[in-house]
Picture 1 (cartoon, rainbow, N blue to C red):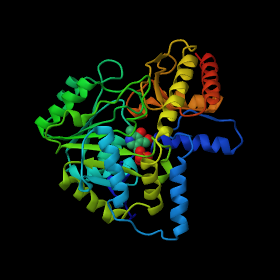
Picture 2: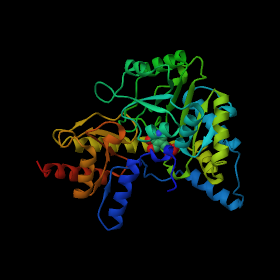
Picture 3: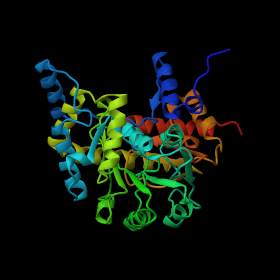
Picture 4: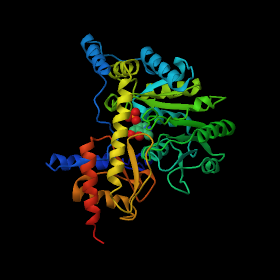
Length: 389
Ligand SMILES: Cc1ncc(COP(=O)(O)O)c(C=O)c1O
């Protein structure tokens, strides 16, 4: 009899973003002039303070295991960041540092979700949410907005049942670039407190905002705090995706402690070099964040200007992140087919909307440089004109 793999593992789908990246990389390696507008990885250089910290740490020749939940220095840096950004004071026992926001989210799901528990989140969603919830034994409950890309608070409320363990919210949103309103966040904080379900705020893009917008602060509406979990990290904010450092902050010490125990039994701890670098990025000069936002805002404006030249598509202006989520359904309702066509025909990588729970859309990133954005959209426009009718 053949050796079988676990049913938990084999139900998990490939990451569509990584799939498109791999295909684009292979074409590039074959010498093709690929333009990558599919990535979720900022191209800007790492802050100097982070680089210096890695060099200093490496030169010390002490690269050891770290405390499992994060070094005291990094936890203090996370606490200072949280106090500044959320105007709320937490303690070290409220913080768990993990290998990226992704592990922080996964730790949460493993700690909170019983088999069959439901985790509610709106579409479009980050591609990993459904698979992560399933891996944790839970059932993803996806709330599709009746109109456009913005879910209403009533739509979320209707999806919450006695089986709901958590509501998971990513605002600013990957892929839409939208920020949900302060009224929405206030009602959601109050509603989840009353219903005694966790509210997990995946805030990984919360500072990457444009036109003077602000991401509403859930802490300013919380009374109980015990159900609120804030996830953040250095990947997007400082372009430090390769460090793999993110964190969860919650007043619920029991939750953080259980999440920490699971982390200790899986990865033991985070990389010593990465923790030193993340700490330096958080405590070092922050002008890089402002500079980054203005570059991204400029890139977004360029992208919107170029996209406006393509007829029959629909774009809602992104207020944040480095993604735009564009309705291309006039050209092809099958977003996988359209993304494959664009990559094969004109060598432009974008991510199919289906992966984010919104068929007919394509996610176009604007973290690439401006020349790539202009040339990429020019190629897309050309390819759409030549689409076989
Ligand atoms: C919404 C969202 N959450 C979490 C992550 C993961 O971030 P990290 O690199 O810190 O694991 C991403 C990365 O693309 C993301 O888009």
